[in-house]
Image 1: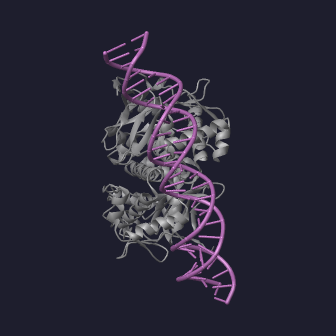
Image 2: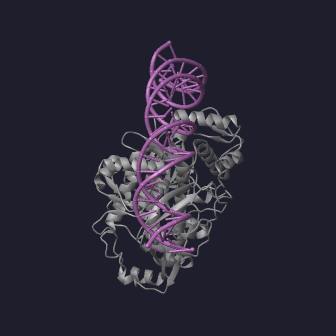
Image 3: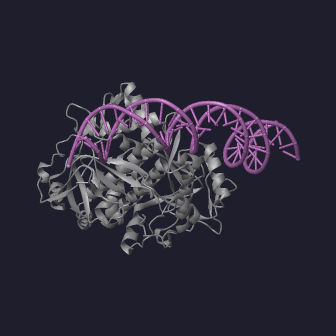
Length: 250
Length: 250
DNA sequence: CGCTTAGTTGAGTTCGTTCAACGACTGTGG
DNA sequence: CCACAGTCGTTGAACGAACTCAACTAAGCG
């Protein structure tokens, strides 16, 4: 695997952060922005397919995704893999490892990913000096918990078809509000990723996706999924969608 | 349903909190203890079977479980239910609703439960005045996330037998470190709860539990589960157990 | 050109479901 | 005190969803 990690000195100043322009995120105060600017230690670029964080590691860093897609997963000893969630721009990763010690899941890049790097040790300073940002971090953790609740409901209680529809609707919706689509609603995942998220075999996933395609909801093309009818997928899954409130990021 | 909620003025002062004595929790500083004491607004007692928090509610309160067992769950419109996690003494509940607005899951008492009551509005004061406690709350949220990661792995990728073994080992281990057993390792859940946690039907859950019983790992008795061999259950599930680090609570 | 990765399809098997009936126990009202 | 309903657990039979195995296409890459 020709994967690489490249560390840059700070490239994008937080003042020009591309995420700040999105209507999806809450505004920073002048003061908060300054603090986060100092909190940020640099940037990291990783190739598609590279592992960003690995289970068992004691990472000294926290990251916020600037651009690109990735996923969090866990594996059993015999290799069975479960994808837990996907990471997209604005997501904070490595928090579990930072606050509790050891990482208990891995994170892999689906596309080239660029990350803001923060240091574990300065997190306590953030809590001491900036209660509003500390609260934001809790908010972010609570959001992840809520997403996991929904995934668990899905894997535990929805049929294969509903599950697939839910997952694709979820990814579509997240990417949409982040304005990651330029014209074409394309999700850069393989059927193996879908299978490992839904808790199904690849073969059955393939057959299930074909049913969604027959209904005109999606089209599978070029190693990924074109979403043709996000609304229809949500309806099929019985999913209300994520709440529309502004969310914080660091 | 003859369920009731009773609000008491503060009964147990935080200085005498029964949880503080457990070797499983980290120590409070004198100052933290004082602050939490003021943060606590009263106590609430709920009957077995009562709903503590309900999906869709905008609760003005946060709770810490003092005694008793409960569970968090979500349902689909047609009634399919997924249990997300169990709550036991020391667990903070209602955080999702408090930081993000609306509750998106419900919580029900499995046994009579007593709760410490905190007010939503004073949470920000806690963040402003006591960074170490704010950090603890993030820690608690990260822990819940980690547990959900493991449940998702289990429901998605383990066989029915492994799943059941994992769940019972998990409940056993949590209750054990909290010293909830007096002699007998008894879990107060019905097979329906197990089924709704594992994402299985009751019938198949019954047959699966019988297999665990045949192996001498558990015994089903008096509407609950006697754990005969927690170690054996963990081994069967391929579960390493929770980390032994001290955890905070509020 | 061969090698690898991703996706497709069919056949047969296994795991888990639904349906249905029944026993044990608990609580309630007549 | 007994009858009755309700909850919980158990079991068998038949069915269906999802799995494994296997063979095969198509595309991308050295």
